Length: 129
Image (cartoon, rainbow, N blue to C red; front, side):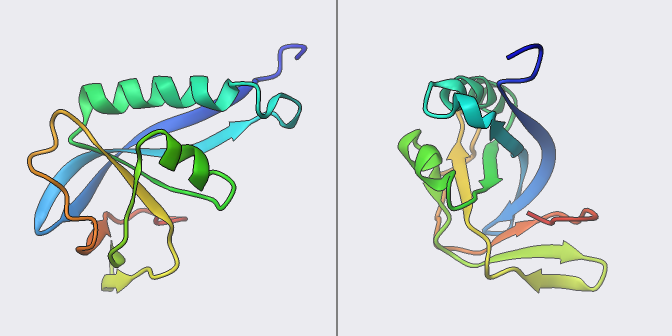
């Protein structure tokens, strides 16, 4: 496409708290495919590389899914987080009830995840999830 990216994603190092345990998390964000190339395997190729990075270097993978992206992530084995979500903020722990979070266990995940428990993300400016 004339030097334009076909698709992209970022893996950001974050700390998520699950059941009182802090996990080094590869947080996936900015996943996108050029409109003209959708449904042609670009998203699959991007996510294959993202998942390789997450599985190879983190205790957990996580992302906040858009309505359009949720089906792709679920089909690839990402688990929807069914429990409450929250964020550590300068004002304390704040519930974030409207998030569609998916997680990906890795070979380094210390135990089986209870996806109905509370999931808490670390603080950052801008979008918390």
